[in-house]
Length: 306
Image (cartoon, rainbow, N blue to C red):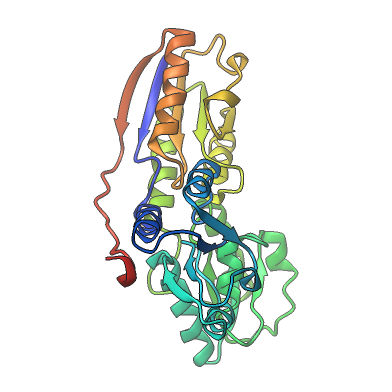
């Protein structure tokens, strides 16, 4: 069996920044150190930081007055930030700059009087933070059907934004339908879906014709990891999303000639190596690295931990 190892895969610049920021904050400030939401959506990364003394919370009231608090890569709403300041919390903001860009776009569109339609997944940490950026309610759409159910005047002044970790194809379908219903709808000058999400999906699509089956490493609450598995399935290949090598079922690969292996933007490379090594041992598989695009993006660490 051949292993087609896709690149780019795994950690993106935003995840690298957030993970390094939390490591440095623990080293500089000690523990306990509180984090609002999971620092990134990967169970192993979160468990490792718990072992180091990080405490992950979903409610600012759970953080003791005056404590150190880091915002996760997914960002927070102004209301959460204000609540943190009222409690005298010492804040380190590890929001991904690409998420912050969407927040700034939301505020700008709101100032200009637009009704904002957000393409994203209900309940996702990033979506919650983005929807909290403006006083007027945003209209969240998750599908083309949701667009058809929008009850806005035909002449409404509409702007749309997208969650950064969506399937590029799915988002484009939703936006196309939105612009059919509302031709005047205005998007951001630069696409919201992040470069890393697009690159990982592009690499998967390019390699998919060569593969019989796809293995995606990532946690199930990771939107971009889930999208990778869905893109593979939509391309006609069976795809399996696993958190670690222990979740692999050998039956998925029996009789297969080529398995495409990739990883979501919050999955550590160590987990990829574990999965590849398991396939090599069980199936005497050879490994081929296929680089579709090079990434050299880096984001500065939060000022508090530089």
